[in-house]
Length: 336
Ligand code: SF4
Image (cartoon, rainbow, N blue to C red; front, side, top):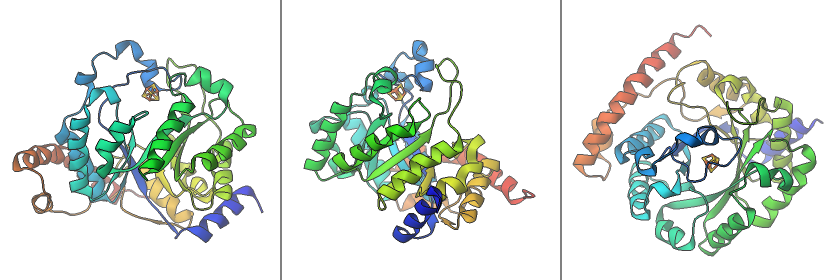
């Protein structure tokens, strides 16, 4: 039996044959420490200036949350440069998202302090430690400002307040499969509930020129699935790599993330995700290709937000809707 077959068998013994899409919601386009060498923010670090300017308006964030609900996507996590929002403002945003989705959220806001976790607790499903790379020698150079001991400290606080823990891993940063046991040990040591795997996407003005091969990316997912049958595994896929979907799912990923889903709604990568799910024997929950027929006024009338905010959300929603609905029509007439 190949490693992929074994991982697939492990998945099927522990989960129903379904999959879905997760969208990360970014609250700001700001990074206080743009020092991670693989990141787009690192490549534009000299242009990053004011955290307040880079942040999004609440109505824009909530309109996006509304679309995730309508399309049946999950929100992967809420991400932001922590310096761009006060805790009171974050609470307002998370409260709005909760009222729209009915769900508590995963946070990816850097290392949170105990007072911050305590304040946001009613809205938190879990916190994310951005491990990125498990090879320590590489890590010290590539991710200099995300020390593992600080992540560990945050996870201890998460345990104290009984919230879940997740980590992110990027494959293709120079690590090899020989580093896998370090990941296996960290998952066990920290009691991780969920892991987001990504493949490196090389950006201009970073030291990276090429991402990993599919086979290498899927090996990390498959080995993790075999060692941790019940762990939630999310796999990132970019628009030019969505032909990998059946393999990511066979390797044991529960769900797919990272595709800029609004931009690509109804287009080839989105179609490939839905078809890839079918080819892997999974039912795709929600839609990336056909915008649901909903009455936005009726939907908003059931959400407990101020009328003024709902009006602002609706205005932004309708701009998104125009794009999504027209791409949806393209998908319907797609000859594939
Ligand atoms: S990965 Fe996050 S912390 Fe690192 S440079 Fe990018 S945005 Fe900043």
